[in-house]
Image (cartoon, one colour):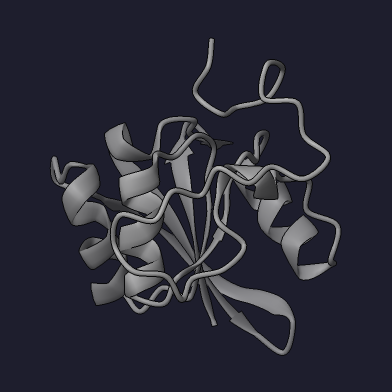
Length: 135
């Protein structure tokens, strides 16, 4: 399994579409066996899903991410863990331990829908205080 984290100075970078680096973690038997930092070479949010797919990424931990990017990641089969923050290494360890703190309400829980689908369903979430894009 390969996990990517939006990366800047050891931390989870908070703007997926503007990330300049990802830290990639190779995971075997539930533990990290290697990692590397890769540059996106200026790829924008539209190209980042394909960039991650080329590296064989299975899951992405990130901060903020827009609807188009979420859909693009879903289309290439990358599991998304948005709304994470803190140290990149610690977030990967937390994911592997089943205790990652992230905000699933920032992404659709179902990926079988066609284009134009509006994922406006928020369960137990107050959009006025969350990351729904209303500031």
